[in-house]
Picture 1 (tube, rainbow over the protein chains, first blue to last red):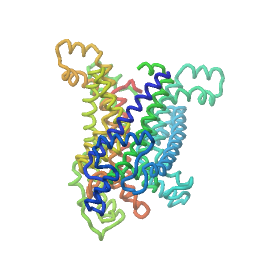
Picture 2 (picture 1 turned 45 degrees about the horizontal axis):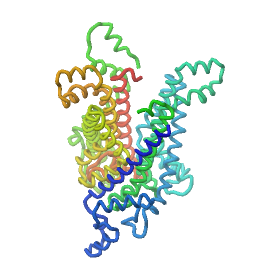
Picture 3 (picture 1 turned 120 degrees about the vertical axis):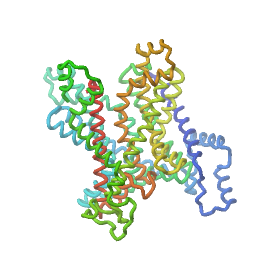
Picture 4 (picture 1 turned 90 degrees about the horizontal axis):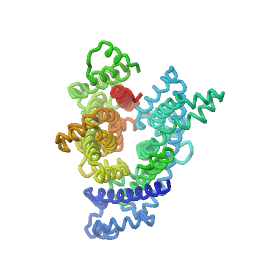
Length: 305
Length: 293
């Protein structure tokens, strides 16, 4: 098992290095530079700026320098925000995006698993059909439609929650709901499928025959196996919750990573754009690693592949 | 879902093609059939949208700005006095075209790549799949933004950009299937008859993947449409004044309190389309692969 984790860790690290080099190259492939739109079009000033940020060196050297900086945990200075380092900018923005993502995931898991279990326990009854109909609706309403609806209902009409901004616990409820509900729906479908599979099995009948209360049968015996399909879904889900948060962040005016992700790439702020990509990629790769290891722990056959 | 259509057929003793059988199973699923009908109508409407639209989608009439739904403008007008119904119809063209074309692009790349990797196996397979892993680790938005920036903002580039980031999962699924298929006797028989590798992959192996590929493609279309909407919402999609459902929703979201119709109509249309695509995708999966239930 240890050697399996070691091998996976090494290959994840290599993947990450390749991602950094690839995104560095792609970013530089884009025509135009960070100082094109500056009012100071004076050639000598521009040259000075490029020298200062070492953009005049050969690309390979720049890439090498960037990688060496990464090893020391330094993402470099932001090109369009003078005097600010990428570490500072992202250090402020990331916790907000992470908090939003975590809250959305919590909502998705709690709602999704409860609805899924409920539907499975009432399999093929009216309750199941109503629950699954709602779930289909949930899958189909995109966050960009749901968010304005939530704002209108809960912030403007009922005045329970603030419309936008960041700071208090109330600020996180609506964006997290808008972001998490679609994932809740998918989790509900997976949970229902997994539970239906498990509830048919002999050991559940045995547990019931022993006279265990239904609550114990479900919570202690069925849920454990029934949630297995969720594990492999969670990795990609967390990743797409995080990247999906751009639109929600924009609607609710949350000062998270989302706004830099788009604007930095468009402004050719090379270092900031790469910084955001690296934060996300590291998360994605790490999540895939965790999922792989979790699956290997659950099913020894995976390790031999 | 009941398996009545199959049973009735076998009782009559007549032969029936698997495609027919699948279609029959699909139509027996009421939600899937209704969704298919809805999408068909929507597709037809989108095709003839320029002739159907009561106004030109970019016609500005400031005097009529922000009119609620009325007889002259069934769905109201936006801040520039443009007719929402006309914009919604043209937007359907853009959104559906992006969904279909980008999915097609991703299918072609994904099937060719995955089938080649799976067929070659060994080192080449390892290398090719490692590239997929690397691209998987990149946030897809970053790639799309860069492709659009390099190639310029246009509808065709949007197709290509979304298609090129969407093929990864298809490639993985196809590769796994090919690994299974290539050990089967009919492949061996074809090889023994002297069929070359390219012909073997595309004439003998790929047709056997069609079922799973079709199912996956149906589920891919809504994902691509959502991504287009995301891009348009962030201002990176189709260029003004061309509307897509994403841009319409983005415009509507900004003025939700004052003129809710600008948000509600595009939002409902988009959600209904996504809903139908999900039902159809589920129905197709059950119809093409009855064992999966």
